[in-house]
Amino acid sequence: MGLLSDFFVASEEEATRYADRMSEDDQGKATASHVRPAAYKGLTDLEVGTLWAILEGKEWDADLHELESDEGGDDEGDSWLFRFPDRLVQLLAHAEHSALEAALHQWAETEELQVDADELRPVVLDLQRLAKQAIAEQKSVYLWGSL
Image (cartoon, rainbow, N blue to C red; front, top):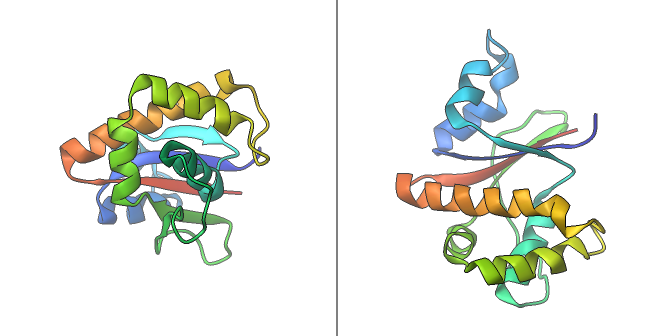
C-alpha cells in the first residue's frame, strides 16, 4: 500500500479528529468528507520541509524548515500529524506560478524524491490551493501520514 500522505485544511480540533478518525463508527468517512484531503503517497514532513527550503532559496535546515508536530496520530507511531507553520502557508499561497514551477523541478530532483517533475505538479498545486484556503478560512494546513 505504501506511505499515505493526506494534506488538508482544518482547525486544530478538526485535524485531531481527522487523525483519530478510524476509531469513529463510520471509520472516519464523515470527517474525511468534511476536510476533503488531497491524498498522495510517499510524502513526509521531510519532503515538505525540503520544498519549503527550495521556495525560500535556502539550504534545508531542520531548525528552519520543520513542520510542527501535532498530538494526532496513533500510539504505535504508525500515523502522525503535522501542521504547516504560518510562514510556509503564506509562502505557498503567494508564490508566483513561475516560482512554483522552478521549485517543482528542483524538488523532483532532490535525493529524497528522484521523480519526474510532472508527478509532483498536482501536489504543488494542491498545496498552494490548500494554503490559500487556509488563509481564507483562518485555519491551518495539515499533513497526516500513515504507514
